[in-house]
Length: 255
Image (tube, rainbow, N blue to C red; front, side):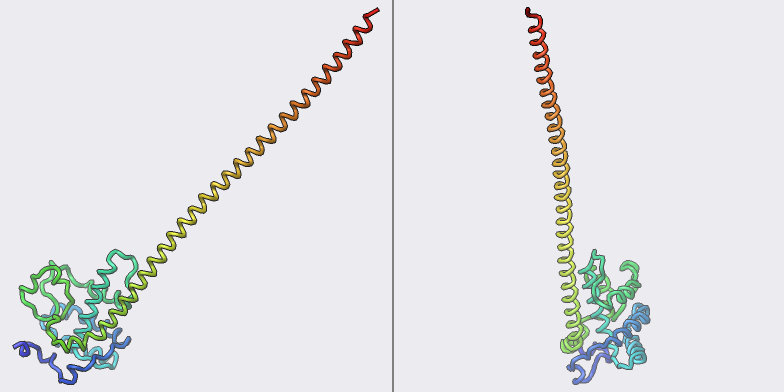
């Protein structure tokens, strides 16, 4: 019964079913971004979009010369949408975008989606009204593809390369986050040390100013003491002269 429900375009030969999916080249990825953006509205509005994915595969073949099946494009778009949502949740509140070359492009493409309340038709494979009215968590699942449509072998073969790419991108991004946090801590430590150095320099300058004022006061006190000593010496000399004059006057007055 389950096999009868699988569309015919998903049924492949036994050899293709278990073979390892080819890696997507950089040229194919750039072409896929352009094709995805071109057919985005049609994918969103079409309930059964197998033919749309086939047209996307033909368009990609014209652009790159590489042949991809419609289901390969569907799975790739689903994986990239999942990867985009994961990175967007991880970088929520961050100023810098993730270090993933397709993040900005996918963000531009998916930003064309209306709000959940305004959606009249969920893009992707046909779903029932019950599935469309699920919780917000279910609504935020990857676009265009129900994961359970494929057998275990098909999912393993198609997701293997994408999971490795996603893991490498996540590890690279986490490493950059760690480096950024370490750099921020170093800058904060350097800023604190610089402020502490400025405070110490201002305290040292204040001590030098107080020392100069103390030296100036000491010089003034020594000058005043010297003047006082000179005045005292002059006073003694004057008293001695007066005593001499008095003795002379007394001696003259005596017969």
